[in-house]
Image 1 (cartoon, rainbow over the protein chains, first blue to last red):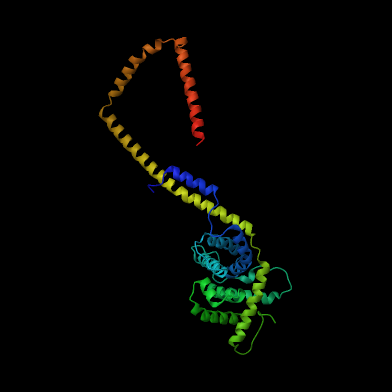
Image 2 (image 1 turned 180 degrees about the vertical axis):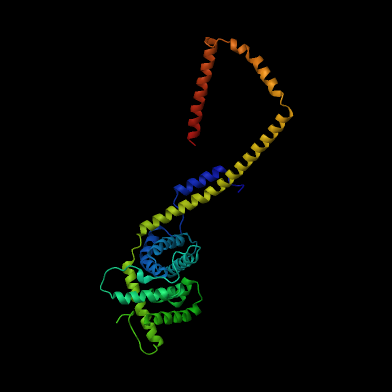
Length: 182
Length: 146
């Protein structure tokens, strides 16, 4: 701190306000990536948390943290998995914090759905059953069956070992099927 | 038959369970895609930029905050020590104030005799006043550029 003078501080402030802040991607690359991933990520967040408002908030936060991350991404898949890892951690934090944003067992059947020629009763059953799963089970199943992620991608996104995914998926499937058939 | 109301009488096989789950989640994912209304990429990019700038500014402010705190602490310490020494001095010799008053009265007596309307007094006073104003304005323009 002894090396920082008042003039340095003023200069840093001026630079921070005037210059473009350095982020991990340029605008064009970010916007293209966002357009490819935002819809799916919002679906993931809304179904894992069971709350649209939470999904809206965490979506913005996820992309901000991705932009701030000083990680050299090897590929688009790597970047996407990292984004899901950030999003998943944010959901866990939101749930485990001193004032959780949502309950562990979410009532997704209460979420309003758009009008359309779909079976409302069946949809409510699926949502209710999905909401009774543990958050990690919901995340596992969603990544596997909604996003079509491989075991290694799921492991990367959830911070788990690849070898454990098969068993965890098996258990989650069983639980969801059992709840659906009740 | 929808995933929600499907009923299998016997114990379902793993393949059947997988089919049920896959069908249910695929239907839910399709619904989520129709519900999803994320903000536009331009808005998200702009918000991220703004937040990054705010955080950079906050980070730059941190050293000056520490320096301010130290300066205030030093000032408070100095003020306390001055008050303490002054109080001790007053307690030790309270008679010196009367001496000061007497000497001031003696010195100021000839000043009362000065004619303030005389030009030998008003001219230098006016010149001093104008100099003070000009110096203040000049100082303002010099430091305002920085």
